[in-house]
Each structure stands twice: as structure tokens, then as C-alpha cells.
Image 1: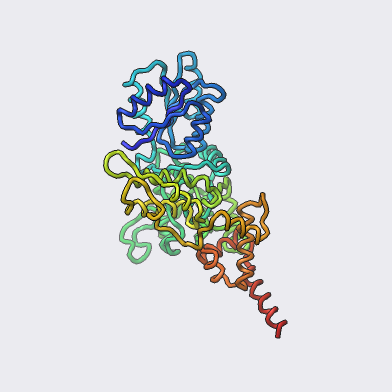
Image 2: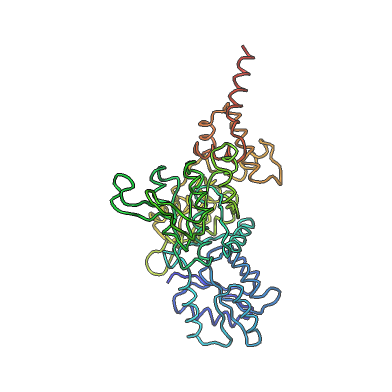
Length: 463
């Protein structure tokens, strides 16, 4: 087995007893004597299950439950409680605890509840796989808001860069909603040309066009009573935006070639890596559709803005992909982790996952070393001292947000390249498309043009 369990109790003898019982069954066990110590452990690595005493000095098992739900929403929590705190344990279950065990308990009872809890983890079922790990305060607040919004029927808009986990969050919303027993259907609006996307979304009748040899329901019909994810909604053509707006308003779809509309009951989640408000200002996205989609807006911060999540995620991916013979898994060396922490991760969590998976495919031992990492664009890796020096040169000061530093860095780079976006993107170690998205995000669409005009004016003045 490769499941990792965190056991929390202020009684040393109880810790030893639980630890020995579960280790004999092949589980990886970490112990903590207090909630504060447990929180430190949770920030260091990913655990599949937390077993915690209900009553402890300072902070209780209920306090730990709330923290676990924030740090690692998919990790089940089982409470160990004495007879006098049964009501507290029942209350905790109403707040999301998986189960509780009444002290004293037998080893068999412990093993049964642990196995049930581990088997309940969604990622054990590929259809419902969605693990979101974070200890970032901003992202934790987003997940809390998401959990509240999931229980409603509100349309949700998720804005974030590529690779941050937008679809993962959308699947989590579906699983926490009242529609979780029905289908979750995803369609990538950027992956299909306009005519194919229309037939995919709305379906068609037999004979509607050449090649339509039979009728086919669209994604809206397939997602009926469930959830439909419209991925990268900002790439949708204007004519389809108008049809989508009608579907959202009337709650019915017209198949291509159909005579009568088909009623639907679908919860819509839309995602985008672009600034829809800016697209609205430019006339590239319908304002009325934006208002329909923007009922609840959730934002996922990029990985470079939540670097404390890198060790947590790297450890999770090592466990996911690094299983070797027997029960051992691959662990990151301190040098390798330091290398990961210094990289800018333009591809976000997806890039980190791919990097770990690629490295583990060729890792010769049980420790992933820095030389095993297939890293990475050296231009995107800087040391702490270089970061401090560059910040000083650009005029950054303590307290400046990562977002503002990023904006200033883009502006300075465009100035240095005379507004040449291709050269600026290369210098920043990002793609030209990412630079364009950033310019839209910061309202700097004309920055490249201004840079070229300034350079041209300077050249004329020098003649």
C-alpha cells in the first residue's frame, strides 16, 4: 500500500497503539502530538487520511478538521472520541468529517474505518478524480467560496491561466453540487472550429447537412440534469455566443435542422484564460452573455504567486507517479526541491506535474535528485539574490504584490525591446500568446505600439 496517514493525539500511548496497528497493515504513518504540529506536517506533504483525537489542549479536532478542509479538501478526516464528546463528533460530521471512532476501540474497528475512509477518496475513481491541494490563503478562500457556490444553481465563471487547474475546480464544483449523481460533460471551445462546435453543443437532426446520416444529441442534452463545462469560453465565435445566450435564457436548445426546441436543465460552468471584460470592451465578447456567465466568479492564482504550494504538489505528484517496487515511493531531495522553488512555472501546475512525471520515469533510485529534473528553461530560473537585485533595479520595494511586479517587469521589458513583443516574450521566457494575454490582463494592449513609436521618435530626433 502507498497510502499516507496522519495520526493526531496528545496521548503518546494512543499514538503508539494506532501507529503500530496501521503500520502492520502497510500504511505509511506520521504522528503529531498537537493540532499545531499536525498543521506543520500537512504543509510539508500530502496525506490520504487524517485520524485525530477530538479533545486536545488549545485547538480541538474540529479546529483541525476545518484546517484540513482548507489545505486539502479531498483528504477525509476520522475523529477519535471518548464517550463524553460523542455529540461533538456528530457535530463535526455535519461539518464534513468522514466518521468517528469511540474510544476505546479494537484494532479491527480501526482498520475497518480507515479502509472505508481511504476507499471513499474521489481520486480512487477515475471518473471523479479531482484533487486540489493548497496552503495559499487566497486560493483557500476561493475554494471556500466554491464550496458555497456549488450548493446553489448559479452559473460559475472560472478565470485563470492555462495549467492552473480550472477543469479540476469545475469537477470539484460538480461533485459538491446536488447534480453529482448525474453527468459532468466538458467541451473545449478553443479546440473545435465554429461549425463543428455548433453541432457539438446543440446537436443535429438526420439530413441537416452533408454527412449527417443520423441524428445526434449535443452536449447540452448529454449534460441534462448535470453540469456542462464550457472550457475557454473566450474563444467562442460571436454567432455561437448569441445562440448560447438564448439557451441560457430559454433553457432549451435547437438542434441543427430541428423543428422543435428541446428543453434542458443544465448547470453551466465556464472557464477562460483571457480577460472577458477586456474582450467585451473590444467588442469580441457579448456583454449580455458575460453578465449571464459572471454570476459567481472564481479566480485561481498562478503557481508563481503561491510558491508555498510547490512542495505540497511536488510531494503529491511524486506519490502519484513515483511508485517503484514494493511499498516505497520516490522522494524529492532538498536540492531538487530548491530547483523547483526557483523556477517561474509559466505552465503552472500542469507543467510541474509533467516535470515530476518525466523526471521519475528516468529516476534510478528512491530519491529524485536535481540532475534527474528535465529542467527547464534556464531563463525562467533565478536565484534569490538575483531576484533581490532585479527587484532593486526595477524599483520594487517590500510589500509590492507579485501581480504589480509582473506588470512592471513586462512594461520595462517592452521598453527595452522598443515595443517588439516577440523579443520581449523571448526575454521573459514566455510564449508570445502568453504575453498578449498578460497585456490584455493588465490593460497594456497598446504598450508595444507606444514603445515602437517612442523609439522611432527618438531616432528621428537624433538625425
